[in-house]
Image (cartoon, rainbow, N blue to C red):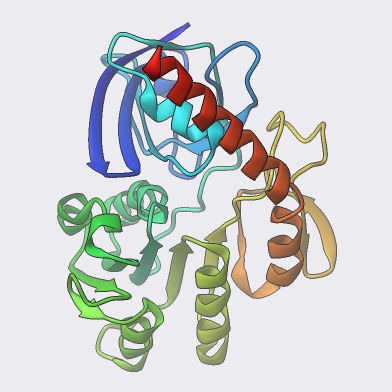
Length: 282
């Protein structure tokens, strides 16, 4: 069992959890993730390792409650335990000294880009970050990103925080500003956002890395559920990634595959909400 040491609500649907996992914490690197099972009968879900503390043996996860399992996870309290946490999994992010990089995070994707931005800064890069969300409530880790960045630009779709617009608008400006000298881009967020970033940076010939949130079951390449097409070749996001060259990703195929179980996920969520409501009324 993996006890929750600390819980913090970052937004109405976003929760930060610090979990005791002493065998995982010392081995975490930027880009690694874990497979979590909240209860023994529950599904397995992949979650990025946002941070870890080998001294205390803890790992940090940031979870957005959008379905049955993530809502169940976010409902747990300090002192409760997760049934399984397996990791660290995935290929770590290739951290290099590019000179100057742009790190782009959309929504809860900012939680994934944060450890990468920190690793890039520690490697000697100038880090220029852009974080965005539909509304101000969905923009997270502003302070943390500012601590590891030379500059942070915030955008919201509705203009409730920072600039009104989408993350590709300031990214284009950064790429046009030759004084910054950006030679690599890291982008993590919703698939349409990453697709738009890849389309933009390809025009500039700037290497771009994205983290693919494909459907996963075991996280070891055995199930084949996280198949993605990279430059026409089948790869597994769990063991070959989760990060890939954005200009080689077939985003349209991945978007379609991620929708495969949409109806089943909706029904499971509805049943969970109905059961929870009945329990609260009892």
